[in-house]
Amino acid sequence: MSAAQGCSNIVVRRDILSLSPGEWSRVANVLRRMNDEGWFQYFSYIHNAEFGNIHGNDMFFPWHRRFVRDFEEIGQRYDSGFAVPYWDVLRDYRNPGGSPVFYPQLMGSNGWGRCVPNGVHQGWTLTFPNNHCLSRAFDRGGGIQPWYSPEYIYSVMQRDGSMNEFRQHIEFTIHGSVHLGIGGDMGTYWSPNDFIFMLHHANLDRLWQQWQNWGHQFTMDGRDARGNWVGMRSRIPHYGDEVGSTMQLGINRMCFQYAGGGSRAMSFSAAGRNESHLSLVSVPPIKGTNGNTEANLTGLPEHILQKWFPRLAKAKNMAKPRNATRSAISSSINAGGQVLVPPTKLTDAWIEMHKFDRSSVDKIMEEAQEFVNDMNSVNYLSPF
Image 1 (spheres, rainbow, N blue to C red):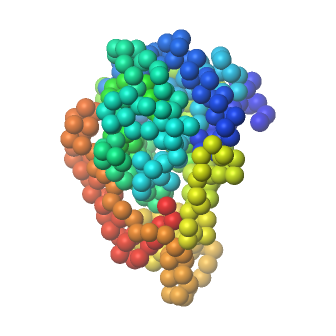
Image 2 (image 1 turned 90 degrees about the vertical axis):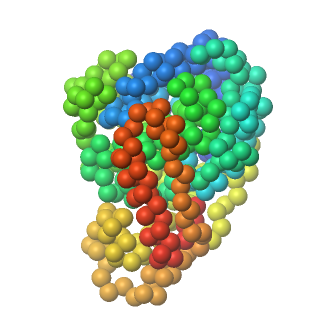
Image 3 (image 1 turned 180 degrees about the vertical axis):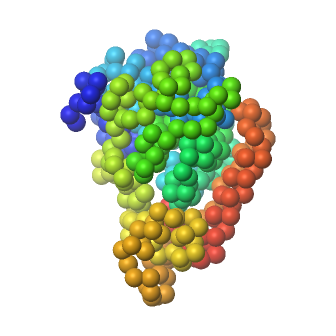
């Protein structure tokens, strides 16, 4: 990729499950060297120290973008082509614990509250806040409770017009559910001990970029942890950079892009991963789908589209006559798949840990359940 202003090397962040064995080996080698030289301790320390300044307020997205980029820049000291992959957790929402991400060849499996027995962290000693092995403790014992569907997050991205709305929707749903579902170090103030933290936050950043691409490139509002308004000139905790320096990829220090960027960056397709490259794990194709979930959604009844997918509703009404036949709608909705399942709610302990406003959390939890009810009421079947 050609360099942009201020960037001599722009790396491309890709879905971890699209990496070849050789590409993943290069990533894993960088991670091992970073841990050997104390960098995982460094990043866990920073996250712990700044925890109250970067959660529950609108520094959440700029700070984490700067943080993951900092990690990436350190990794490039060992390999100039190093890029943090992302984990498209939305695709795995129904059965997260069964994701190939947890295979021994990649991130390793559940630790049942003890040491993760395999994967890239196997045999590591982590040194913050004390010497310990990496732990995980799936919230369903042998598995992980369902997260938030691609359809729901896609709806959020279409409906929210302010950073404050978007941030709360993401932070109170998919952000928290992934941390809680995996547990162990991921459920603590020092969650960057687990490289899954970086995979997860790279994906959240990718969703933010998609939302930015939909007319919100410089949308920044709301308040920081001290109640001050957040704007382009606001300073990012710990780093001191201006918020505005993080708002565009490919310039300033944001020298990265996402594979499949542009308006389709969310990869809202059941065939969004380049699975042919992945020989170290086997990922079966999703059955009963035409590979274009967006097309399935446009077949929803008008009142559901207007309520939950206004961007799609507008595009549909501009492109097609309004007198579409009911048979065509039914065919589109029922292209194959399964009914949506309710997502897991944030725990009381997690809400208290982050000092979230409980009424705001409850409102979003109720909305997420209403979304599932509405979609199931019209017999929508998801390919995910």
